[in-house]
Amino acid sequence: MSRSSLILGLSLLLLAGCDRAAEAPAQPAPESAGAGDVVRQFAGTPLPAMTFADADGNSLDLAAQDGPVLINLWATWCAPCVVEMPQLDALAAELEGEVRVITISQDVRGAEVVTPFFDDRGFARLEPWLDPDASLSAQFTPEGLLPLTILFDAQGKEALRVAGGYEWDSPEAIALIRNRLAAE
Image (cartoon, rainbow, N blue to C red; front, side):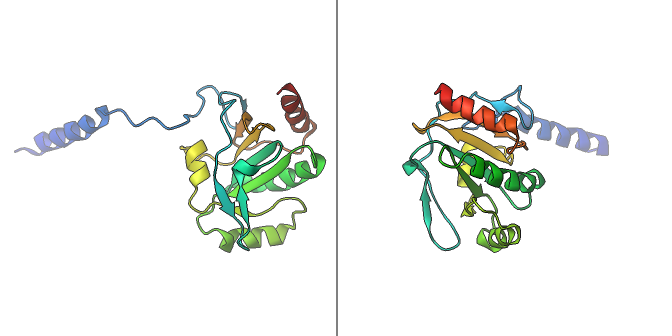
């Protein structure tokens, strides 16, 4: 067998493996949205019945939340996530009593990296919830795009989401959240 026949044969074998359709993700990314765009494609999706813990062993039951919540999936290694954290802390202060801001780390190393991150920055309102298995990320962003922030209304239904960085402490973001919740 000649060398060119072997290369051609291997190339055909590799291409043949590409004709199988990939399994569709549970919630595919919106095709027209870019990073930081507000998306309402998944409006009405229920808040998942999942439980997360912090470094001290306290637990957070998402399904038991009373009132609107803004959930932010983030990681210490994600540059846009790190930029958003102080903004989310300021947003939590601004919207205190209106919306609970919940940040859930997708760091595989969990408290080992999240606790020092929080200690160094001294957030006043954010709590260091952990999801080292990235189960929430797998449910909402199979592509693994972080940060991902989702607003759920008082009935536990998704109102909007933003994949990618966003300026959460801006007047526009505050108005967006208030207006979206008022419309529900």
